[in-house]
Length: 268
Image 1: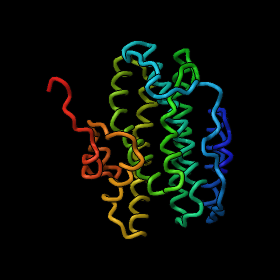
Image 2: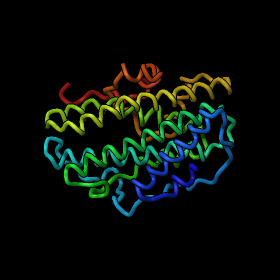
Image 3: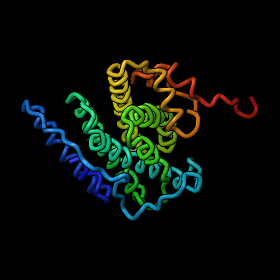
Image 4: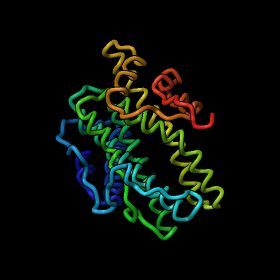
């Protein structure tokens, strides 16, 4: 089921399949059954639609967020992140089937993939209401780099994807909501609030299973987190941090502040 999602290119088709497989999984769980978890050979990179054009992050054009074109660019970037997140959550299921994990591990990532699918479609609807669509602008290739770098390291994957990349979403989403509140774009505000609330859970799942595996291997979670982020994440973490939401998701400050870019801003 996971590989089928990963090998489906079109975003709307991918997310429809994701919803369907998630429903199948949870229907079985509610019936007191567990669908057998086997092993798979997922692609190193998931299938993608012909558009958007994928560029190096440095080459993606920047637009002023206060303009309609700038707000469309923000939403296009969010849609791209959400589509990558759908694949990232199915990929962790497909790629690490050889690591013995409790059924709850799969419950959490199937639920996350299902929610990311909803997020992608919510943002695509907002884009279409604004006269655009996913694929209308270039997007960056950086999102999947973390998946490739951690393709053979489940602890590295948990550290970098939910506990760094998705935690970053908790930092920046309130500012995005403010931009759309100033523009009075109610549908987008509501969509971003849904995403913001549910992303806390995804970061929390990452922290939970990271700590679980560190306990299995009798390792100190904080030390392992610092080691793996320095190994796999390219660059320092960027404050300001949403410390309240990070704490809610099980990420205390002593996990991320030692990895932060603490260079003073110009003029300070």
